[in-house]
Image (cartoon, rainbow, N blue to C red; front, side, top):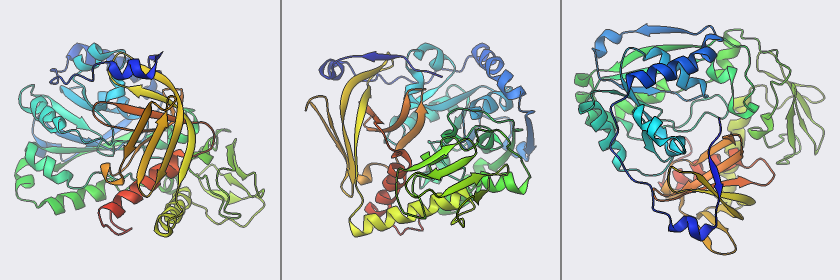
Amino acid sequence: MQIKTKTLDYDQVMRLPSWEHKKPKKPSRLLAGIARAGLGGELKKTGFTCEKADLERAGSGPWMILMNHCSFTDLAIAFEVLKDRPFSIVCTSDALVGKEWLMRSLGCIPTRKFVSDLSLISDMDYALNVNKASVLMYPEAGYSLDGSGTRIPRRLGVLLKKLKHPVVMITTFGAFTRDPLYNNLQKRDVKVSCRMKCLFTPEELANTKVRQIDEILDREFDLDYFKWQQDNGIEIDEPFRADGLNRILYKCPHCMTEGQTEGKGITLKCNACGAEYELDTLGRLKGINVEPEFTHVPDWFAWERSLIREEIRNGTYRLDADCDIAILKDTKALYMVGTGRLTHDVNGFVLDGCDGRLHYEQSPAASYSVNSDYFWYEIGDIVSIGTNDCLFFCFPKGGDIVAKTRLAAEELYKLSKGKTSSET
């Protein structure tokens, strides 16, 4: 999938009127059917099945629907399993670029990833109570990078209690394994399924403390798809299964060098020390010429997080990267405005560019994570920061910085809130 882009001078872009807020439309059943048909062909290839449990407790709706986020396949799953009911999707604002009428007619509720949006709650309430449509939300906001559960916002229970509608959970299986974000949009031959179940009735929400609701949600989103693959004997024999694995396993545990790992074919190799691993057909890491430090991809990723935490504590963490810069100001286009430099340290993000005309700072407390993506709209890897009025998309020029930046942003946020490393 691609996005409409336009090269424009930075000053011209900044003079454009900012995003106009609009109430969500009632979803068009006709357009939803067309979307389902368009996405269904891809889903049919996966032998898709859906297990439904306890949905009678949710009643006829509208529902507040929570779904974990693994790949673009999630959207096809949603349109298939919710085909019998109107629903609105809380989506990222860039999804409306060049096609605002279509997306709004589908009932989409746009918001900015990892940016405080006070209108979002009222928009969801409007969709549920005025449009009488269910609302589908991916509370993780960002795709899972390593196949494990991605952090969800604290006190999500407050929102659910406020909306007072049945809460239904959709959990996918196989979507990440089929199309992991790091693998350059190359799809594997994997069966995909999901489970739908009622988590809370309105009465249960009213009688359950926010802390307890959040604990239940944490358990529901506590996933590990590499383990799921191994437990279920899912063989991935595609010869490209390790392509791009360096995007998440960017630091060599043998020589401690960063940015020199290379995932290609079925192997991950450190070009600094020569250590080489195979990603086998069950998603396990096997040392080829070394004794493996890690055999499980999420364990390696968690180790990288722990090292970032140490860097932050001892004051040595710093990102400093040249980048191309794009700006999202409205729904007409993504504006390519030039080049700059993105830095990130214990004081937060600083973006400078466009011949000194652009300067933006963002504190660690601004968000619990940062929008990071690979091969975003087939342009490149990105880190995105900004406000409701203006989002900056930074495309790093070399080096696998996206995963480390996201991990660091999450750890710095915890620190800014006085939380321990074990808290989420």
